[in-house]
Image (cartoon, rainbow, N blue to C red; front, side, top):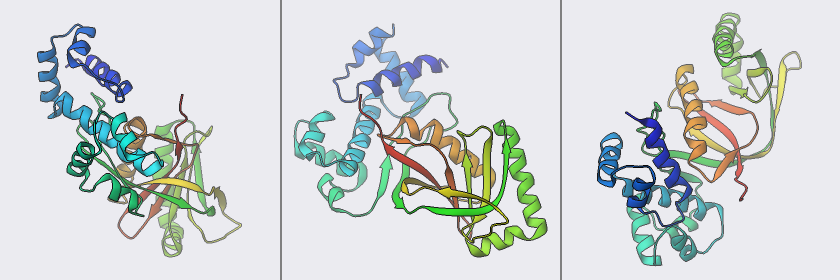
Length: 270
């Protein structure tokens, strides 16, 4: 399978979601037969090119409705709809709520149909569900490890948890509210696990006040957490109007689940 060529199709579509996309011209540009191109795309993704374009446009419209005060009709026209009615009908069919009612709700839950990345383990991901919250700054006190490479960091993280369980520190973190954070842009890479319970004998990190996108992992397993973070970096970042700010990624643990908080901001317009 020529994933490079298929990703070229996606790149072209993504750059032109607010423009008219002529599938025949796209196929010609890539030296392909438009019927064969569409057929291969559908077989690999279980969705037609036109349906992919529709879903991606509605997905970006969803974010724009939540993130801006732009008029609904202007958003509709921007993403290829010729009337408020046709946009509202298509939007409700996709997300189960009308654009006007989405604007009225105070819930900060987002639904995003992601950009496809051929050759990725997340290629078949259908929808991204996440939440955006403003959180106040706080400090985490705990134990940290650092490393030059991701593989070494993950090895040291596993070793750290074993040590914390053996000496009872892990159980203390659990009782007082259990957090972990990773600084991926740091040199060396840093991982810290702990709680908000102040302890000057432990390492500490000050989490800044701001807006965070929150993703549910579905378990507390480190492999699932690493996979979720990889998904955020590989798929979510290329699918949204938001961009991830600098570190840290924060893991917030409950009894049987983990939520990853990622600092975000609106992408700067060119």
